[in-house]
Amino acid sequence: MMHDSDTGKFGITKTELLTRLPSSDEIRYLTKLPNTIHSDIPADCVLEGTIVDVETTGLDTARDEIISFGFTKFVFNEECTKIFVIEADTYYNEPSEPISEFITDLTGITDETVKGHVLTEEQMNHAMLNSEIIIAHHAAFDRKFLDRYWPVIKPWACTVRDLDLRTKYGAANSSLASVMAQVFGYYMTHHDALEDCFGCFIIAEDNLQELVEVVFRPVYRVVAMNSEFMKKDLLKMNDFKWSNEERAWFKDNVTEEMLEETELLIERCEGDVHKSLMDPNYRWSEVDT
Picture 1 (cartoon, rainbow, N blue to C red):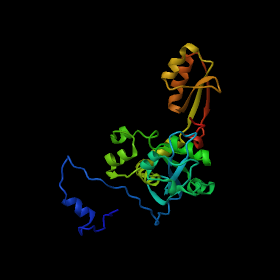
Picture 2: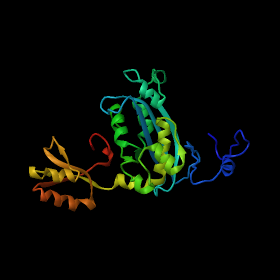
Picture 3: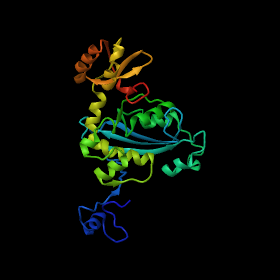
Picture 4: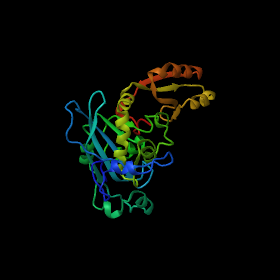
């Protein structure tokens, strides 16, 4: 990776090189995603967080297996205005079955890469145990996989579902590589857990205060007990889901601002309102979804 102060094979820095290239609205230059780790940390950055990503043998969070676990630890201040990566690493895990050719083409990870490696409790605790917040680009996917290996009960944030990237940045889609290229001017290589962590960090760095507020604001699970059967479509249209265990329709992550409207809807469906405060430690987990 060529840093700004480095001189490449042409004997000039990256900044000088870019000034000599043609300028046009039809041309955009991308630079490699930065992966800087800091050692000189301001004294007020006493809070710790972790960004995580996993590469897996498939998309089934109940059956497929992790083959690599990447993380970046970061520290930040209470105002969420300073944030610095202090450690980054990748841990590999050998699955019970050979890695498919498709997954190898996608991730660059082969059977030889993971041979003899086991993802351990100690590794996951090292990465996440001291964190105030854990962040992933697709938190529901990553957390369900990681919880199967060793659940670290912490509040999770999702840079896709907890942020409106389209409205905030005008992003065409939520793909990490697309957001990095379109919004931040960086290019990424293949699916790599650690590189994805650094990409997610770019988004988190720009939105940390919002992510923290979303994670720790009070939200409720609201259940429409004994609601009228013929009104079920109205509940479904308003994002209620059916719980076989409770034999009732429910809606999670209802904010205090949404409570009154949600309760009125249940009353229209002739149901009884049951509400409970949700624990942020289980956001995007199997319990949450």
